Amino acid sequence: MKTRMLITGMMPERALNRLQRAGIAVEKVKKRKKNEIVFTVDEKDCEKVFAIYPNICYNNRGYTPYTAQILPKTGVAKLWSGVKKRVGLALGAAIWLFLTAFSDSFVLSVKILGETPYETEIMRILDEGGATHFSRYDGKNADLLSSRILALDGVSYCSVKKVGTTLVVEVVGGSFPKAQAFATELISDVSGEITELTVLRGEALKSVGELVEAGEALARAIPLSDSAASFVIARASVACVYEGEGADEQSAIANGLLCIGAENDEVKVKEIAAEEWEGGVRVKISYERILHANFLS
Amino acid sequence: MRLYKEIFGGEGDELFSAARCVLLPLKEGYFEGVKALGDFSDTLVEVCYKDCTLRIAGEGLEIAKFCDGDLKIAGKILSIAVEEVRK
Image (cartoon, rainbow over all chains, first blue to last red; front, side, top):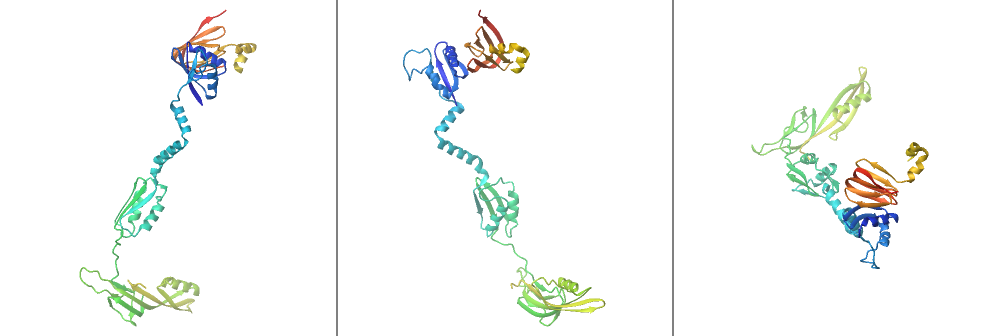
C-alpha cells in the first residue's frame, strides 16, 4: 500500500534528495506550493520519513527545516481503507448490490390468478419451460408457456408475465370444461348377433337375439326439444365370427386376431378353430364385441 | 545493456558506471546516477549529476519515481539541455 505524504519547508527539493539518499523511493512527486511538495511512498517507509523529518505536531523535539505529514487517503485508496475498517458493512453492501443487480432475473415466487383446477398442470408446464422457483427466467418463452396453458381443456385466456421476482400466471375459464360432444346413437361396427343390449337413456332399435349389420344403429337418443342436447346411454354385446385364410395356422390366426382388434378390452375371443383348406389353413374365430355409448363401465 | 556493451566494447563498463539517461521521445525519460533534484515544475525539471546539470523542458512533467540515484520523469519531454559543467 502507498501513502501520500506532504513535506513543508524552504526548498523542499532538498528534502526529497535526502529521502532518496536514505533509500526511500518517492513517487508521483508534485510541487503544491513553493514550500510544499506532495509525494507517495510505501507504507513501510513512512516511519523512515518521520525519522528524518518529524511531524512537529506529534514530536516536538526542537527545530527541523522540514516537517512531514501523512495526507488523508483519496479515491480508491480511501475507499479500500474504509472497506478494511468496516468489513461487515462492505460485505452487506456487496451482497445487496449483487441481489439488486442479478436477483431481478430470478423467479422467487409463482402466483396463479384466477380459479382453475389446473394448478398442478400449470406448475408442470412452467417447470418444463424453465420458469420454476429460484430459476432464472427472462420471459422470452412467455408466449410458448401461455399457448401450452391455453391448450388445457376449458382455459380461454392465459397470460404469463414476470412482475419483479414474481411470475404471475393469469388464467381465465379454467373452471369450466368445454362442452363435450355426446353420442346420440349406438352404432355397431361389426356384423353379428346381439347377445346383450342395455339402454339407460334413449330408445333401443334392436333387441337381443336379432342380427345386426356393421353401421346399423342399436339405440338412439330421444330428442327432448329443439334446443336441448340429447344423447344416448347404452351398452351392447354382439357375437361375431371371423373367417380367414392363411398359408399356415399361426399366421392365419395372428392375422385374424389383428383384424378383429383382439388387443382391445372391448373384444373377447371365445373360440378359435383352424382347418386345412385348399393347400392352406382356414381359421374361424368366434368373439364378442362390446359396444357402448356414453356408458361408464 | 549487453547490446550497448557490445557496441561500446571495453568502454562499456566505464560508460555505465557514469551518469546517463534514456529518453523515450514524447513519453518519459530515465535518468541514472542522479545526485540531486533541482527546482522542478510541470514544465521544467533540473536534474543534477556529479559533473553537470540537465535542464529538462516539456509539458506535464512529473517525478514518477526517485530513489537511489534513479529518476523517472513522466510527461512529454521536449528538450534536454546541459546547463552547467563543473570542472
